[in-house]
Image 1: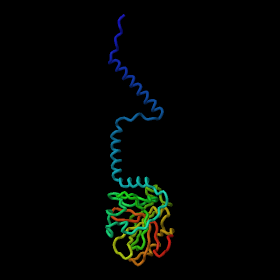
Image 2 (image 1 turned 90 degrees about the horizontal axis):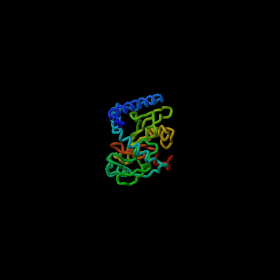
Image 3 (image 1 turned 120 degrees about the horizontal axis):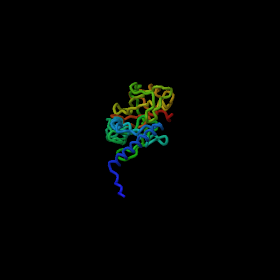
Image 4 (image 1 turned 45 degrees about the horizontal axis):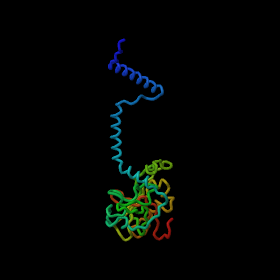
Length: 259
């Protein structure tokens, strides 16, 4: 009996290829029958590359906001913050009456200072400055006057910011920031900007019906320095100047207690 010849490797390859082809076709048919699309082919790669580039561009464009959002989430207010008495020189630092991020104990980074997000409804009670010190964010300043005050029609919204959930304002109302500048009585330079924030107003924390943070009645208390007021708010560095944003309460200095 002749020994059996080993199979030709080319024939084996052809049989394996045909078997694989039948298996692949059968598998794809089964997937389609089950309502599942066939595995993606290499055509998706250029689209994925484009999407990655777009994502990187968006991240770069909104990097500051993303960082603020992450910081605000990582450092939520766990309980009501206790306001701490501060002088203007404590906030503005040695450059007072000039505006500068450098030198202030509230500086937290190369371009940041105070709370990480000015519109947060629950800002952190403390931030760590560039010296590694924990400094309180909610401050109280006494003996100041309101030099100017207006409704910022250029800064309005009908929804909460992403840091506060992003939902529409109640009844789809529109709220604008109410802004002004406060200075120490007896001075004409070295102001701190104040803003009654739109999100805080929409939440009912400030507004005409809030005695401690009345955004309308305060109009009657503008002066050139002959009317002393006290303010509370969170310290925030806004690009080129210091703010109490959000400003959270105000009263006449002659009033013995806060509303």
